[in-house]
Length: 181
Image (cartoon, rainbow, N blue to C red; front, side, top):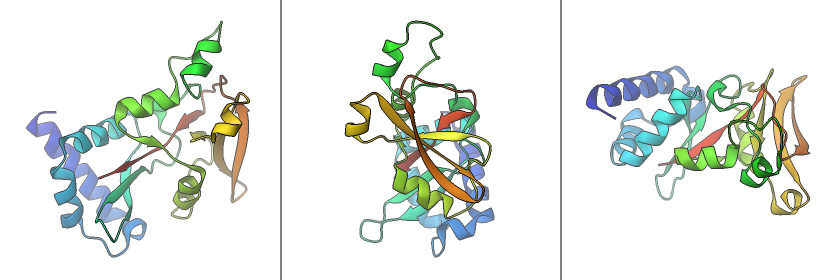
């Protein structure tokens, strides 16, 4: 990322941070900026989150370590991360009509983690997300070993967790990620 792209990203992140203070009460942009600027890998991950439509924003901080958590805060599942099956095993099982990729590997290539169900529910406590789309979430191994995967959305003012075959994919299902800096 060149200096101009870096500046533009940091301006976007700062603007979003300032516009959404309830997501990170008691935190200062200066403290966040210090952490982000100290990690070129974090900047690259944040750029990828942004470029795929995730609209990353700060959603928490570990008081003991100072570590800051960014999460995709786009209203709907990030547009650049939809139509993916869950993981490589699921992608390899598909014989026809394969999707362009899978959520687990795409998240790893971006340097982020799929949200857990707990993180997804915490995010929903900050606003109404995925009211028209859904997002894959990290799936427990006992569910995955049986061929399933979990996804979540918000409908009727409630957060729902569902299951589907891990090889399934839909135009309105993507994934949200988290980044610890």
